[in-house]
Amino acid sequence: MEKEKIILTGDRPTGKLHIGHYVGSLRRRVELQDSGLYKKIFIFEADGQALTDNIDNPEKVRQNVIEVALDYLAVGIDPAKSTIFIQSQIPELCELTFYYMDLVTVSRLQRNPTVKTEIQMRNFETSIPVGFFTYPISQAADITAFKATTVPVGEDQEPMLEQAREIVRRFNHIYGETLVEPEILLPDNAACLRLPGTDGKAKMSKSLGNCIYLSDTADEVEKKVKSMYTDPTHIKVSDPGKLEGNTVFTYLDAFCKPEHFERYLPDYPNLDELKAHYTRGGLGDMKVKKFLAAIMQEELGPIRERRKEFAKDIPAIYEMLKKGCETAREAAAQTLDEVRRAMKINYFDDAALIEEQAKRFAE
Ligand code: TRP
Image (cartoon, rainbow, N blue to C red; front, side):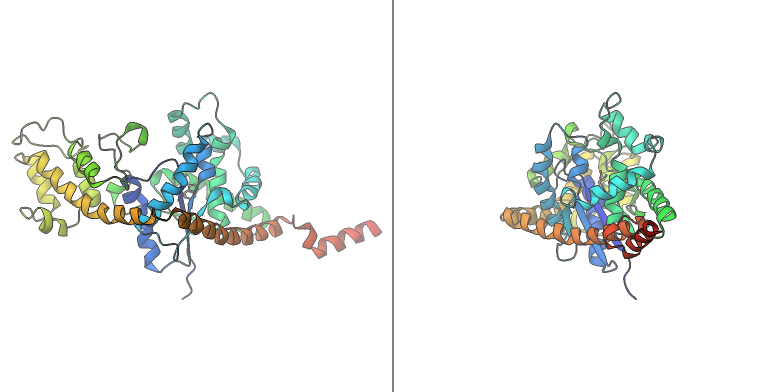
């Protein structure tokens, strides 16, 4: 059977990627890439979108384009299988956004819950940049320009996908079947939907200093795990401990596989038993943290090493990105061609139009 499905997903290059990105999306992308089930895979850096709320710090975005590219390669995204590109290098995305703007109302944008939260977080209430406010439209362009069927992202992106689907339906209704309606593909492990910061706060964020980065050294990972937030009422080893909101256990849910017990904690057959003992009392935080640290080192070690290798030839990374942009641009240009035709704004290659107009004026 011919493969029909096309994946597109991306990240704003505003910082190095951390393990929240890894368990929430990067790990899955590599699996999807290697599954062989997809006709094409596009992974991109949304630098234009990153600028919508970083306009006074463009250098941050510029610096992180290469960091994120290294993170992609380090986790195993392979440019031979996935097209890696940069949003700003694809002018077709701006053109598409321009047309889509007519299909969305201001009140519709104001209802987007993710944008609402972001406006609050950035103290934009009194002066929202227009580009920021309208980024869901530009994101619909990102997705549809590549005819993506499948968009693997976190749950916070659901409103963006809904907006994109609405634009597709509206466009197709007005201009005829042209665009493809995308579907969201959520992470499959509930613990991965949003990994908390090492301090137990809901989200990992650079400004809170509670992230474990893919580029962190082994020592940094060790230190961060050992100082992680657990259960503040679990003081003595004999005290019963709580699992809820206990970051160490949330991370174990995200990272731990059955075989890790044999290797690093043979006293316990599985995670359920470990949790039961912790809840009962008699299991100290440090023992659990050491176990988690061992697991994290096993998973992050090879990533860190590959990242170091790739970083030895930075010009080659830019060359890879440039090639990716060329491939992506071809795909987007094809879609734009179809869009212009559907909208009948392809004046100069529409012989029927020219003839019809000539006739009208001859009458
Ligand atoms: N908004 C996404 C994020 O912040 C990044 C992004 C931009 C994206 N365009 C996209 C993701 C298109 C998926 C598809 O993570």
